[in-house]
Every structure is written in structure tokens, then in C-alpha cells.
Length: 126
Image (cartoon, rainbow, N blue to C red; front, side, top):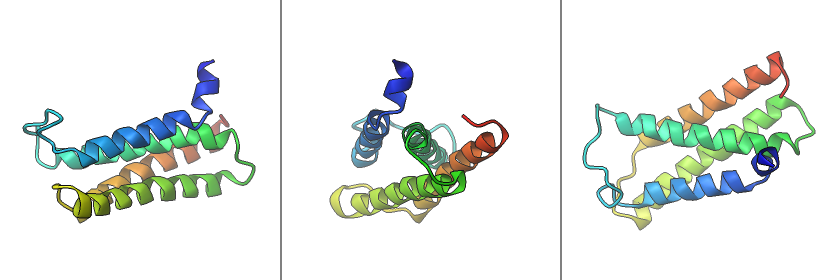
């Protein structure tokens, strides 16, 4: 049952919704007063978008018929692209700031997760 849920699009969609909420809301309204260290928000961005790749992986892997390299590339593009789109959304539709470094952190998190799955798949197919 759990595997069936993981292989559905719902975990990815729910996680994308959580990201949307977190990156759209004013940080004070979600209970964030201060971060424990400098640039901690960049770590959060990397985790959010790396995790999105994880959820995408479970769904896409069950449907994908081409090479794993192409799958990993498209998972990275989808996650990093969503991160970039969210920054522009913040700039034009919220009171939050557009930060190029957030886009970089989103892409780094997505890349790390994508590379992890690529290496894992090459060593031991899932």
C-alpha cells in the first residue's frame, strides 16, 4: 500500500503545495522568528527542493522507460525550475524578497538529490 502511494503523483503534488505555502507565507506567520545560523534559509531551500526530487523520483521511476540519466536530468530541471518560479512568484505576488542565492540553493538541493539517485541506481537498481 505504501509503495502504491509513493508511486502515485500525490506525494510530489502535496510536497510542492507545502513548498508553495512555506515560500509564500510571511516567515513570522509560520512561526519563524530567527534562524540558528547565517544562511540557514539556504539549507532549508536545498532540503525542500532536494526532497521534491525524492518524491518525483518515486513517481517517475515507476513510469520511466528511457535512460536513468535522462530521468535524473528532468527531475533536476523540474525541481530547480519550480524553485526558480517560486522566487519570481515571491518577487511579484508576496512581500518576500527575490534572492538569486535562493535559486542557487534550490538548484544545489535538487542536484544533490538527483546525483544521489543516479549513483544509487547505477550501483543497485531500485
